[in-house]
Length: 101
Picture (cartoon, rainbow, N blue to C red):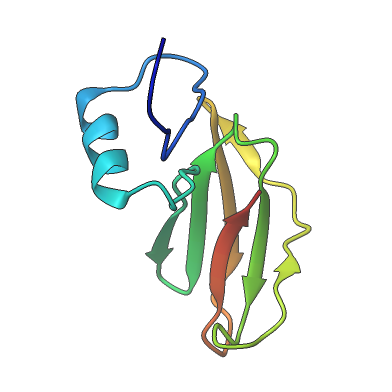
């Protein structure tokens, strides 16, 4: 029987790649791995992209990353090839986005 202690225990839905395992090890046990959010600017618009299977995550935005309120983005994304796409005009002020579990 195991005579020790666990510092980290995670269950994944599928096998991880070698790079994913290396990145998780490098990040340490306190980091929660989540879906990747890409923000692609194009002219006066931005397109946000994230995996469509991240259904338990909510897209949020704020204009004050230091102490502002995060609000849910209520616009429905378009799904193409299992990726959520949401295109919107660039805001007049800096806006930050995140995926929150």
